[in-house]
Image (cartoon, rainbow, N blue to C red; front, side, top):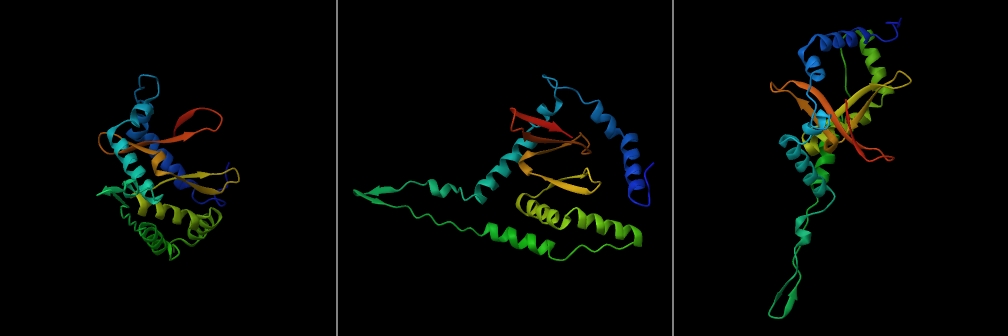
Length: 198
């Protein structure tokens, strides 16, 4: 039996698990129809909403890597002379992203409430390096308009977060707009590209 004094959030976690088990969304994930090849998530990631979002993210990434369309403009000839096309690039977007990320995360998070719970949450925040995580989440939000974070318990019972790249993230919603699942695209270095469902 776990010691609730060691981890005062256990009751909250059990309550959330019970809510998920008793809700319709948990049943919908289990009852999801398989695709033609047996994997429902392969048809999910091909939906227009995901294709459009990933396309937009790819455009933003190209811009941040300084791959601007104006650089591909050819020089032109006039009356036998070659004139070089002026290519002016303003790289202010990276500075704006850095400024807004720093502004959002400049003040530390302060928690109020039950003294024991606040103390525990501050320890979780410090052990899990959540200052760095907050900066990454803020950068993703400022850059792309959304961010995806997976919170988990590591082997040493420390609560940590993994930031999932926007272009690898596919949140799944049902017809009513209720969040029902998440698909992450990833490649294994030893095998061919694969997809993982969480």
